[in-house]
Image (cartoon, rainbow, N blue to C red; front, side, top):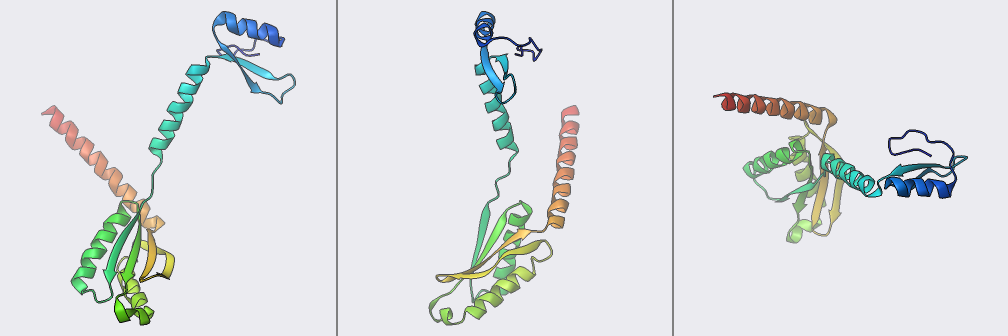
Length: 179
């Protein structure tokens, strides 16, 4: 048996351990049931649950949810429109999200799926310096799409840039506070 400070009390019968816990205002929790003899500890169960919830919340806060952003276009899209959509896709990738690039087929364009693949690959070629194809072109209904994700090298570079920007912002904030 262990006390609330994790100091060893010794081998104690269950009834006596329960009495000790009741006298000190603690709960008796079995830590290692497979040990011979089983190990129990005195602890405040409510406080224990509170700390567990707090740790779980802290872990959730550190977790990054990756979203899949979508960029849609038709097959007859102009070059300037492609550039605008590529800039948006680049921003999404740099923010740490995946990007689903979709080409929509209209009318008789459905007979030429190879044109959609050409448009998607041309779109991707300008992002290939920071992105890799995660999912090859797939046709679903009237849409053909690919999913791209940021390369490991580019994501490491982006993280370094964001860290340095945060440091610069912190320095600027300190300077403004000192004025």
